Length: 309
Image 1 (cartoon, rainbow, N blue to C red):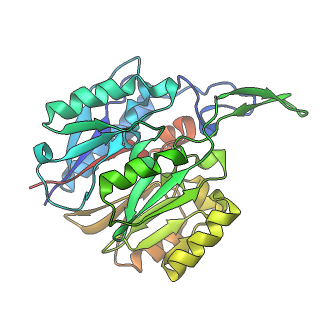
Image 2: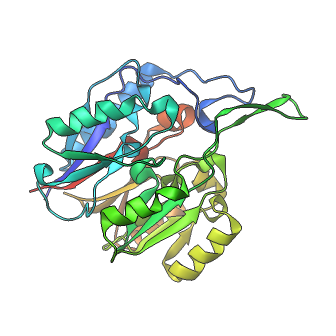
């Protein structure tokens, strides 16, 4: 059955707020996007996904909301693997950081045009970027939510950008209510601002999404130890190199090729072989302009609406 996803038209993609470390230079200046290159990469990705059987719904471009190219932050649906018509699905809308809050009404209107039922989350939360299934359970990631700003530093340059994270731990009871009290949620605290969402640290994949790519260094020591205890040999730890290619920012779906993991281009051959050993075909995609300038890769560019008839 086809998988329905959201993608955001990249016509106006640029760096507006510079809300993560990938968006700014060493001196703190916002990076400039090669718009032509970004648009070409986006269309190649969209065409590939459609050719392999996915149903892609495109959010129209909006010059005031360049972050719409990253719809994984929009929210989430429950039971994405279950075959459910879109009008019968509820979509739980995120409570985005202030610089992206104007995106929420855009998502709300667009999802209603598909017949879906948007429901807003009240606490700070950034959707399936921080909340996603692994097997029959869920992972939720969070960190300190701070005001993003420059702060003094005894170094060169004499300042640093403070970014913080995107989802607060207080949202956990809301999420539990949405997925059901019988579903186990594992909360993990993030550590590195470079990996500010859970989908840059974790990726579940495999026949039942039971295997887990993980950048362990992106978790606090307590969360790291608990993750290793819970998931054990289901974990595939990522090297620092693969983690900074955003290897975890990948998306698994059943395509005409079989079970496929769309993953950022540039990850190691060794990792691709580990994925294949789990019966999943890795499919590298070049979305480097979105990663190197915007801090978002394959999964960030896909909002999962679930399987549809």
